Structure formats: C-alpha cells, structure tokens
Image 1 (cartoon, rainbow, N blue to C red):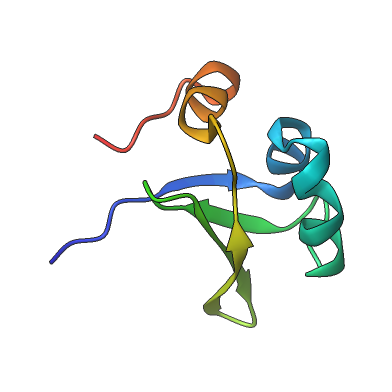
Image 2: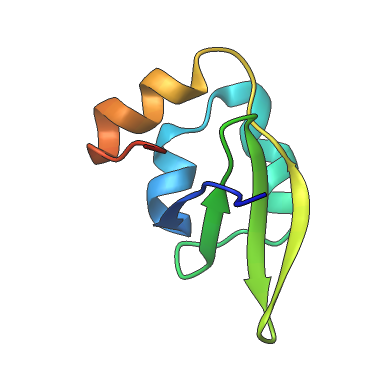
Length: 75
C-alpha cells in the first residue's frame, strides 16, 4: 500500500491550521522551519532527525484548506 502525502513547511501548516489546532501543533514542536507532511486522513507528521513522527491531526475542512493555500492535492 502506497501512502499519499502533501508535504509542506511548518510556516504553511501554521497559517492553514485552525485556532483549535494551533496550540497542539506548536506544543508538538512545529515551527516555521519544520518539514511536515499530511495524509488524506489529516494525520500530521513532522521530520525530526531523519525520521517521520506522527504528531497529531487536522480537524474539519482541512483538505480544502490545504488545496486552497498550497494548490497541492493527494492525487
């Protein structure tokens, strides 16, 4: 099974995150310089020391928010 992801930087993720998501992302260590990826289910992973770690998830209309802000899609 091939997993699909949208890869973006932390600055973009923090801009598209809703208020209810921001505190959790920041407490998980996401910064403007983080490299993150998001799968179609909304799970957020951050690259730390060469390994991807799941740090949480996005809520609500995240797919449309990602498409609108980045122009990226999982297909």
